Amino acid sequence: MKLRTESLGKKYTEDVWGIRDVSLELDEGIHGLLGPNGAGKSTLMSILTTVMKPTSGTAFWEGTNILESPDTVRSVLGYLPQNFGVYPDLTLEEFLEYMAALRGLDSETASARTDEMISLTNLVDVRNRKLKTFSGGMRQRVGIAQALLNDPDLLIADEPTVGLDPEERVRLRSALSNTAAGRVVILSTHIVPDVEATANKIAILDEGRLVTHANVEELVSHVTGNVYECLVPRSELSTLREEYQVCSSVQRADGVKARLIAETPPTDDATPVSPTLEDAYLQRIDQQDGG
Image (cartoon, rainbow, N blue to C red; front, side, top):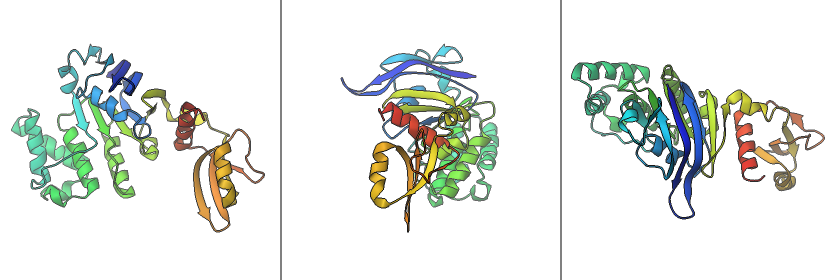
C-alpha cells in the first residue's frame, strides 16, 4: 500500500501558502509528520483526507488520483482530526456502534468491530460509561477506536496528543503502534517524542515546505558528535543562544545547564552527549530558517 503526493500546494491568499511543492511517498508503517505550529501539517492532512482541494499538484492512493476519484481514498480512510468531538450522553459502546452504522457496517460487523476496538484501545472497563465522564486521554483513545472501525488501510491522526498528560500520551502512542501493521499511518504533531517513540520515518515541514523525509536513525546521524551539554552562568545564556542552536536549558543553583548543537566544544567543560530526534529536528528547522 502506498500514498504518494506530487508537488502539492495550497494557496490561501496572494502571498500566503499553507503548503508548497510537497512531494512524499508513504508506504506501510507509521510516518511522523513534524513541524512547528503553522508549518502546514493540518493543511496537508486536510488535502489527504479530501476535505480540502489543493491549488496545485496531486495525490495518489495505490496509483489512483484521489483528487479526481476521492472515494478511492475515502473508502479506506480512518481519520482522527485535531478537534475530535463525541456525543457526551452516549456510552462508549453506543457511540462506536453508532459511528459504525454511519460507515455502512451491518449490525453484526458493527458489534464485532466495536468489541475489537474497545479491547485494542484498552477501554474495556469503561465501555458502558457515558463519554462525558471520560478524561481527555480516554476521549482521544475513543478517537482512535472510531477511526479504525472500518479497518482502514490509511489512518491519519492530526495532533492526537495535544493537551494530554504524559501517562495518557504513552497510552495513546501504544494504541497507535498496535494499529500500524498492514496500514499506512500518518501521525501529525509538533511533539517530537511522540513520533520518536512510534514512527518508522519522519517528514519535517516548515513554513509550508518539506524540509526532509527520512528514518529516525538517518536524521539523528546528522547531529552525531555535535551535541553537547555545558554549565554556564545565567548571564552568558543569551550569548550562547546567539552563537549556537540551544536545544534546552535547565536552571540550576550554580548556573544554567544548556544542551546545544555545535561543531566543536562550545566551552572547555562541555560534555558530548548522545543525540536525540529532537536535537536533529531543531537543527533542521534552524537550518531551514537560515540559522
